[in-house]
Length: 315
Image (cartoon, rainbow, N blue to C red; front, side, top):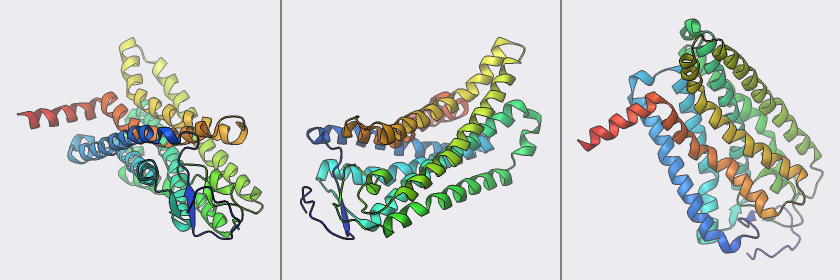
């Protein structure tokens, strides 16, 4: 099917993904960049899972939450990268209508799940620093399991209406999506129906879920910083702050591009389309790549276990 075909139709069986409109000549270079990021993300996240599983000293709430984040990153990156890379390398632009809606659901569901896990990790750091003597009492394995289950159920249920609404809409203009994956706003623009309810519901999810997560993360770190600055020595303050440094870096790498992409879609009407799409990809690809690198470098227990593993392999 020609990507220039915009003949009127109803209920398409497939959509056409254009990749990054305006940067078609650079698709091969973008493929190399994205493929490298994906390989790093896959290798790094599986390495984190392997280290936590094989090192008994890492069997604690902090590392259980890290494993949840790692699995979320693997699902999130795998939801978009294989199809995106096939567009850039094989010019395989068609995607089944149901597959498109499934991809849209997984992207938005696990993006929100990642936010919930960050909130759980902030709570873990708050208890560890502000209530260290009660840490093992408050964050038992059962509590960690319940928090993880609650985050997945909360976000899985709240995001569910998006694909159901999208499936009910008529599509009578074109089936061409000006994006490299089935991003919700890009799909919504193709519908020949009143999509305000979907837009309002999307805003509700963002502000009530992600907004609430950010609020609790902020409150947790305010309390953490207060506890850190009340420590008697500079060395103690620096050591305690270092334990939270990796988490703060990951939070910023996730929320800042996400906020930027959200604002551009709604208010950046004069921003070039290719910049929109690039930022939407950065928002979903950079955190899964950075998370294992930052935690591997900044977390002493993981770094030491990794060095011991390679030292053993070298002997």
